[in-house]
Length: 305
Ligand code: GUN
Image 1: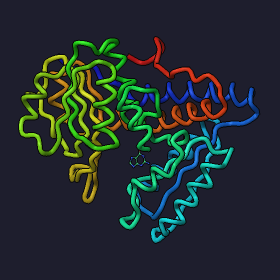
Image 2 (image 1 turned 30 degrees about the vertical axis):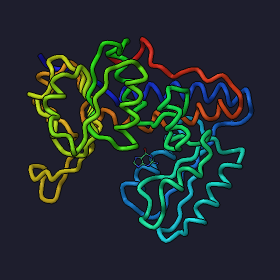
Image 3 (image 1 turned 90 degrees about the vertical axis):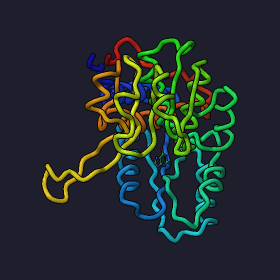
């Protein structure tokens, strides 16, 4: 068997297009477009790339983009004041503070200062608690993107078993919650788990966000399982020339694809869905703040398969 490739790039393009169409229609109705504020503290090179991309894609979707770049030595009080101003700003519907923050800033305090209705990352304790108790709330972008892709292969999660590898607040924990909310039987493994291969062999769905290149091996995978690889690891690629690198996921892709039923590649799998879902969350926040109906952005029959 060779697994079907889950084309995250094509899914993400479709999500962005749906968001763009809805933004155009709603902006014409209300006279105001959704606004996304992105705050970057310091000059982490990877964060710079993400922030630029978030701003660019927001503009392409017809939204307003507000970028706030603060020096690495910004005091916490200053950052919290900025967030409070953005909370009050009627032009801003979504607020995102790029992580990681410099070490002297407390990410929990910073995130919990964002108004939960503008927390388009879904990281605020209120949103985490609401998702945890199965209520409608803003859902973190990467797990939301994974769920959108998984729904294409599993229209019913009942009776299915999933293994999530990694228990970060950004991916693993919310991913486990979303699958559980869909009545999937969920296992969450992490770096202290001792039996991950055995757990994986039970799983119809494996989602891995461990940050370990090639961690998931072919003999861990139940034939026909759906494998979602959230990992993005930059490893040396001497075959491309001296000092060159390439991106790989947390799955031994070339071997796992011979066993799995469907699999996301890296790059071009989960990655593009994250910003597409950020735009979808910003649109939802705008609808909520303007008391407009917020139709779920589920993918439909025109989606790539
Ligand atoms: N850093 C890496 N991923 C993310 C994300 O999804 N949101 C924020 N705010 N920071 C990140």
